[in-house]
Image (tube, rainbow, N blue to C red):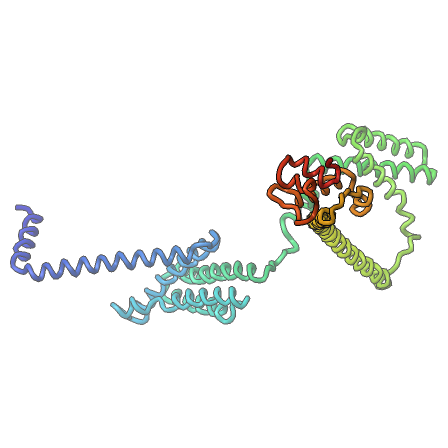
Length: 434
């Protein structure tokens, strides 16, 4: 029987004799495993929340500084064992106190940088504590190379923590150091690089047109100074050569912008002497002009504000005009309805008046005849309207079921009230019956 089988049998024999103890141990192991799993999950969640939104360079700087700090911790481990003669739990608990202090000071300095704009004393403490860790680690070195390595590790960690603080400082203040001597400035000074972001074709065209302008100025100066003929011919040859190159490579013959650039450069070079006689005003004497300019800007701003207010007032006026039009239309409709009601009331009154006149004539035994001329003059309507009014008045007096007033007329006058058609009654009321 092999040794693993012996081990399994012994374990089973022990478990059969101590079932209660085995159950308790298994439960405790499961509980400890569950608690460890929960702690790992919470630590992972907290770490993810802390790292969310951080830049990649920040994370790499912190990771590299942590690695350098861990390397420095190995030197302190040996120092505590061989120099201080610590061992066991006390050595494991206290050997990294300087490195923990460095990390704590670095994070406190970073927080101070974010809140107050300065690392404060914590930034200095990072370098001091790193220097102490480097010295203590190097004291137990066995060789010069190991001593240099022990000295370098804490200093590298301090440098990386400082670079992380520099990033926070730049974000907080927005300032950065601009070196005077850089590779870009050296290349520009040597003519190997361009200071502006221009294409190669634009740079070449600009140089060829500038060369053409200088050649033209050179020929003009030699002619004006009465130089030797061969010098003038040489300057003319250079001018022709520069012109050919500009036409071929800078599109001088077809590009109006290049032609304007050539004329401007030639004019500026030929007018250089006029700068000596140019009269200008000193900057400190331009305060009056500055005041005028400021006043002009204020007036322009006032004009812009007034125009804006005018536009708003015009829109409000248009809205008010539309509202007034709506109110006028509503008043017109209300007036027309009132006129209609007033016309109806006046017509009813006129009908009642004519009906009263008809009754009075019937009571007196007279024949009533309508005066259409007077009705048209009173009402302002035409004869047809007046005839309808007279018809309504007669219908009101001699309508269906109506009675002639007692004693109003003889039997012949009351005849339409007892028999006959409506036409006979109207004829009798009009005084035209036989």
